Length: 363
Image: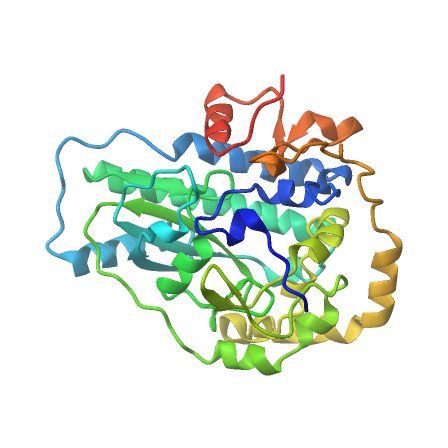
């Protein structure tokens, strides 16, 4: 696969681009597809988490006996708030988005599990509803843990889908939550790839975890399932170098038509064999049955026939100045959404936070 340079991500310091805006910048719009009220409520709930990313810090520190004790308690609380796994690493400024200040020393990464029996229906609303549900849960998990730490007298900031000032994947890898899969998502031996990430950064002294090597990358080298099933042929058969890191790479431009036309797609996660082993094989039978039902060629042809026309639902930008991807607008009914944010109806704090992330509210 020819390597495509996505300058916002491949530069020396990555720039934040809201996921739905990435797709819009290629001429497709996931918001052109109507979703149920339940799915929209999950989407809206992710914005509510933004209100709790910061908060008042208790004046008196409630110190732990040592870093081990602190880490043990924080991981226990992370799981209490909804995480299946938690890991700790240092904040790496290399992976803090350009223009953002994350002053904290430690990053607590959390994996919040998805139900495979819901995400196995890739490229459908059923899949994206589960994704939005878990993103909302992940946001609340991070917000609650950050509040817990602040109540102990230490600064803490929550990062989730609607407010992430750092790249979570490389931090999650460093924190031992898994290895990067060929499909560009994290894989954990116990959870498969059916989970979403959230993060809390803090100055609470913690014991760090280490990156793991459980042979997942070796499996991805020889496993071609996600590559074979990807309708856009966007998943590379070999690693490429981006920002001095050699890694698996998904071709964003080839992924965009399907991601935008089919509820953020997710077929690569649906077919990943690691899901069959997740949670002690809880989903093995379900996974095998689902894979047997899929005729790859037929599915690809069906999905290709239903793709949006480029710029059909998106206004094509005439100028591509700095930050332009975050300002691409939808047409018609989708014009009321700016990167998933309604133009009005949400608290001012949400819009203020989004402006900080480079998402401008259009009056």
